[in-house]
Image (tube, rainbow, N blue to C red):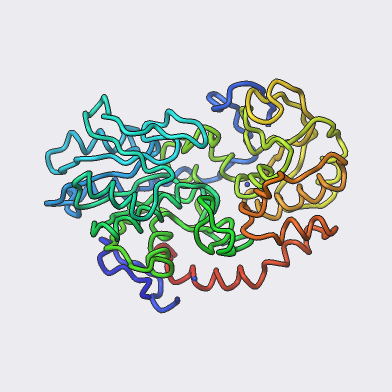
Length: 429
């Protein structure tokens, strides 16, 4: 299949011939007003303004949507540079025939927690019908698109760069459904907030495909949503959709989010800051264990722990000498989720050199040290860790006593193959 997208409003520079990372604060789960660790986000250059795919679409008078009845798959992150939501902006513009909104996990306006959605309703601000896409795929989702009466489905959601962050699989499912329903599909690009420099971590085995990983991509994919859409269309869709992508301008693959000049809107309740996204593709693995991954604190995925853990875990993790990161002995009491209202011990992940930081290696190192330093360590009985990592390999290697380097080396060949395929779908060099 051809990875190139000839209808892309601006040219891609990629070749078309290839076939595949504080200050402890306890309380409120959303992280509003949370202190940001300056060493993690220090940047020696002023922000360089990036124009998102939506900004470029609007500047072009919405030409790509002319004559089309339009439905938008989006959530609270779908904002213009002045933080107005793109649905509100387009609804007020006579040049766009916006007729429907499609809400993913957490909902279009973001009122639902993890594992929830807003259901079907009419948006009070615009009067537009809002359809629920969460946990819908295939023909049932195609039927939603058909019943909505749209001609073109537009996707605009901020991703965080991890395979198990479900919005990219909402993208995938919507592409499949749009193909089945005979709809055009337009992706408005946004930055990968943790850069697009490299793909990291294990590649999913299709035998472990779920909504936290539909297809064989790396755990930290290093791509933007438009690049992922091109890869999905070229590699994984049995019937490619009529795809168009609207690129950003001003974004470089080496950019962290604070270099973009764009406003950060939490993509989900437990992704409050770009710092969270920096560590997430590694520390989310603790969802697959009996340890808290920091949900119910103001630093989710940066605070990790359980009852019975003491300073030995932080000492063991620091002894690994992992690049760009240090671990502080920490104690916290989650307000919800695991260990709700109980004080637990653990670590705070503190990134001091984000360019050198490898979130996936860090997550593996923390798992290895937790199992060795705390006798209470256990995997979740449903083997959720296998779904997060994409196979049984990480779990079985750690159980067998493998060290961090041995676990990381085990996915080397698969990762190299994915990187080669990924390269053919990149839009930014």
